[in-house]
Amino acid sequence: MIKHAFKDVDSLKEFIELEVITTHEVAKMLGCSRQNIKQLMDYKCLVPIKQTSRERLSFKSDVIEYINKKKYIRKTTLCR
Image (cartoon, rainbow, N blue to C red):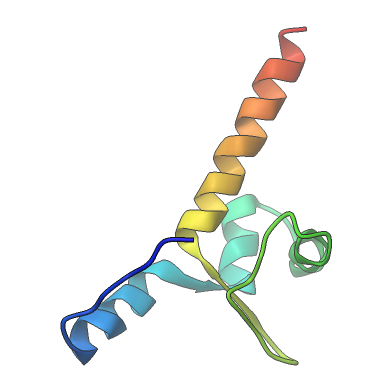
């Protein structure tokens, strides 16, 4: 996990607006359902940064990293 230091409240708000995404946004990025995202999080494939009874929040960079790892695994598996 990346550590961040913020100069002021506005820079924190900007970071949250750009980098923190909801389950719905994760589902759109991965092209799957919210139920699939819940399953990925339950199996610890994706780790939410905040979880409530209604929503799970994630870092966009973690989702991009998961996508890239998934592409790499798929690519290396196809080459065998």
